[in-house]
Length: 222
Image (cartoon, rainbow, N blue to C red):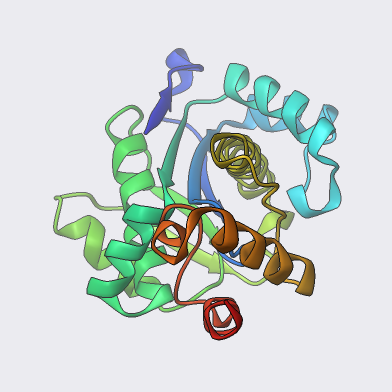
């Protein structure tokens, strides 16, 4: 978990954006980021052309991540594959797991900056997040939006989350000596088969989200 402590003097102004990366990627972690934005920092982020991370190359994301973390208070929750698989076995529902991660990122950021409003991309019942927060004594007005990344704070969170995801995915690939592509494409399935041939089926839990259909396809042929 990572926290950032910029914008100290404006802590009670503005709103929080939350977004995740890795949800649709077979390999690598699930990363959730929360970013606190003030009217002033929002203008700065717009000037930097901060936007939805899906519209930006990894190289630009890496640069913008540094700018965002300098301008804004933030938290990053990274759930590595092994921990992700443990949680999924317990929770058995991706939206509930996402809500747990979003609540954890929000809860941590609210310890740094008092704020009464947050925006996230639409992924499920917002009560899942609110209930998780209330268990920790946190209260906030949460708005889930379709295309939430159109909000500057959510866009900033999407960049911070994606940068962390790409960084951790690269480290996993280097650790195991096998390229781990993004997404869940046929190329990912080929990479997973290569990984299993090199490290065995039991090691897949360390790099992949096992509930994906990709796992069945890989293990059926290896």
